[in-house]
Structure formats: C-alpha cells, structure tokens
Amino acid sequence: MPSLLITTMQFHPLLSSTTILTHWQPNDKWCAIEELVACLVEDEQISVNQKTEVIDVVFEREHKMSTGL
Image (cartoon, rainbow, N blue to C red):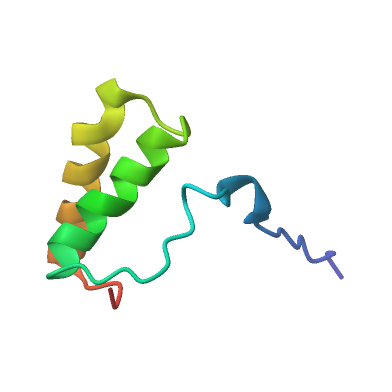
C-alpha cells in the first residue's frame, strides 16, 4: 500500500504585526483584497512591483468562484 504524503502549510511565517488587522471593516471584498495585498507589500512578503499582478490574480479567482471573503 502506498504511503500517504501529508503536507502542511505553516501560517506563522505570514503573520506579523502588519498582517494582523484588528478593528478592520473594509467596504466590500474587493477593497478587502486590495488592503490585504497592501499589507503583504508593507510587510515585504511581496514586492511593490508584484502588487497589481497579485490583486489581478486574486480578483480573477474570486470572479470564477468565491472564496467566501
């Protein structure tokens, strides 16, 4: 019997004081996505040059099937 490959995603590298938003009330999911990506840029997890591309890809994915945001 083949062994099962179990992979886990560790979220702690993604979490920092700039990526944890408290008292946050975006107007809609599109604004939320833009603000979350801005947090990743601020935290230097993605570059400023990647910001528009990341937003576009997430918007495209959200148009195809909502992620529940």
